[in-house]
Image (cartoon, rainbow, N blue to C red; front, side, top):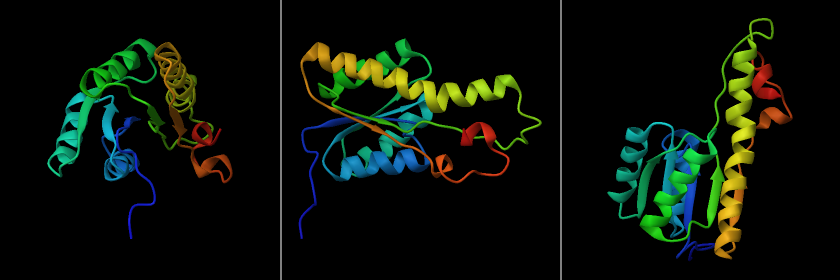
Length: 161
């Protein structure tokens, strides 16, 4: 039986793609035939993850990206374009959580969680969509969400929200 679908000739950028679920997503894109840009806050870890995929015969690069900074994300997107041409899939996957009692969460912790898990999705999507409009090219935006939107996790009010 053949593949259910192919992403041959497509390029995906996966935020938070160097480890965990993000690396699984990057691997799945590669297995479907896409080139992959692994965008992660830690450039060395992103490069290592990309090398792991390349050693399996896939096309991937690792780039540093702070997704809370639109200009920094734009540079990561440009690196992908320089290597593969048009990047036409954005997978917003980067995110964090912390275990803190609702009584212990500081405003700074709250803001950090929201900056990465919510605002960054908007900022990266805005940069990505603007670039596709500029290029007059279609594409796809994928947003990874947590089950915490439906079922709250104890000690993670900032993440649940």
